[in-house]
Length: 163
Image (cartoon, rainbow, N blue to C red):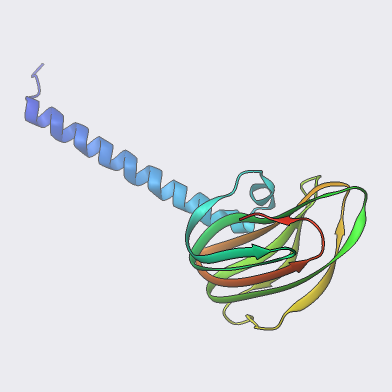
């Protein structure tokens, strides 16, 4: 059997490494894009995604921010409800590009869409909704795909914003 020269071994190794990196980055990107459509992935504890943040602030019971590009999920608000209860929320979700939604995640990992927005349905109007919180830790997450350009505002009387 013929031995490979040092240069050929290096070239083959480099080729294999490039292929592995390409496959790995492709599958990571696909999985981040698919989070938007998968409630189980949205409900998982860890936030994940690719984002370029323009700004994000919170002051008392108000949180707002904008992303130049965002694909993934990010926890915006948490609240440990002492019992099952209703809570009023006012929110705005404006999208210039991509898809975005605000979701409530109950302690049992149920995901409920609060507001969903696309460039075609985007509005600068603040809407008010009543959320049904379950006893325990509730979260509101921002979920986006397709490198969404987003502006959001949230007004909630309970809980705390995560920034």
